[in-house]
Amino acid sequence: MSDAEDRMMGEERIEVQVIPQDDNWGDNTTAITGNTSETGFSMEDMRGKFGKESFEETIGIGCARYVGTTLASILSVIAFLSPIAMVILPKLGINDWDSGPCKPDCEGLLISFAFKLLILAMGTFALFFRQPKATMPRVFLFRAVVLFLVFVLTFAFWLFYGVRIIKEQTSARTPTSQSMTEYKEIVQFAVSFVDALLFIHYIAVILLEIRQLQPMFVVKVVRSPDGESKCYSIGALSIQRAAAWILEQYYRDFIVYNPYLENAYKKPIKMSGIKFYDIDGNNSQNVQSRSRAIFAAAARRRDASHNDRFHEEEEYSRRVRKRRARLIVAAEEAFTHIKRMQEEAGGAAIPMDPNEAAQAVFPSMARALQKYLRITRQQPRYTMDSVLNHLASCISHDMTPKAFVERYLAQGVVIMNDKEYKEVEKWILVSDQLLTRELEHNSMFQLRQNDISLLCTVKRLPHFNLTEEVINPKTNKFVLRLNSETSV
Image 1 (spheres, rainbow, N blue to C red):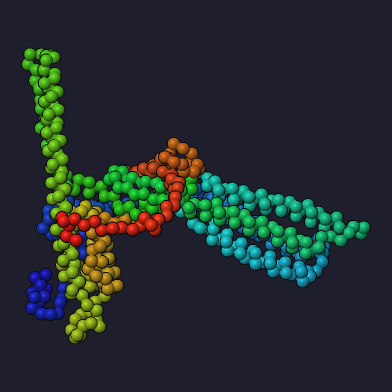
Image 2 (cartoon, one colour; image 1 turned 120 degrees about the horizontal axis):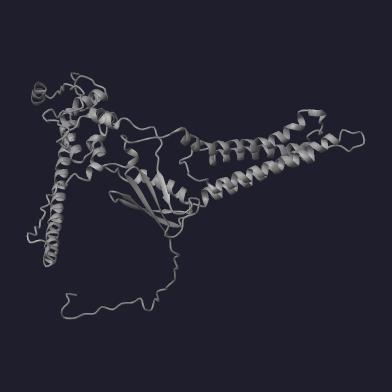
């Protein structure tokens, strides 16, 4: 690397030798002990430790995730195809069924029937045929009510269709019987079925989508163990649906919990214990003096502890700001060496793709980035390969140096944590109330996942009583008061 640096000092053209991609991040002078150093670790060990993710989605969880959607899909398809079957059956010629021709008024009903079915299909697909966002421990009550109405309606129409139409068609084949039901009446019967399904779909939109839009409660979410909290407005939802909605906001708004950051600025406190020896045996007169001495020593340790903690936090913040400034300066200097081909004056430079350019400029900022990630306890989350890929993406899209280091300047939100991202996240919902009950004032429930727990407290929004007060124009006038002490 010394030859490359000499050329950088003497010539305008920059040639940087691509270093091999090892996971020590260029910190070749650091002795990695693994047991005694708090920052001494290798990326291979971290890959072995964090790379093996447990497969959370078992067969039972997968079945519970899709069984509700599968049953709803089957029932919806049966209900949708039923009116079509009612219209088609008379024209198939089964058992010499002759319902007569379809006149113009009957054809108009068929056109209306087709368009109503198209609207119903579009609305049903948009409302129901979606991948479930959460697997609920209890049945979604309103959705079960809607599916029950669809089942009852379909069963009732098929029952009347069999009794009033098919049975009359069978008895109408006798010579003395009257003509069987006309085809127009059958189409009208199917159109009535589609109208009823449209009304059920309207009810489903109100119960499942519109009803929860109006804010009725404020829920405060507090995360343990770091104590981060946020408040959200929420509508009328059941406890389990509110829990799923809160998890959506949690993955979007909360920063990643870093357990290594808790002890970043703490130092082990040496407790100087006070021992008492009773040479003469049990003496009740010394009990009070011992208690006072113990309390006084505890008070002194407490006063010294909070003072030390204050200075340690200030020192840690200063070190973080210092290394943050070094990282930004190193990134800005590295990005100044990168130019696109059309901006080059001559053709002496070697063309490189974004990945090669990232590998060429990364060594100049690797040490600053490593030190910053080490002090902010983010080093286990990022490997050199992930950093190089992010750098290549920023170079390819002409991003600025600050846009590159933005990912590492903060812990980031939960959903952007690639190291622990999973397609299925398992949470435990703890509540002393039935999960299908709606939220109430002072309701409280908890969500748990490993060492993280979210305590949710619900408060109802108050009723706002607004009164009107009109300003009287006669009293909305002012005078200027002058005295010798004012400058006016």
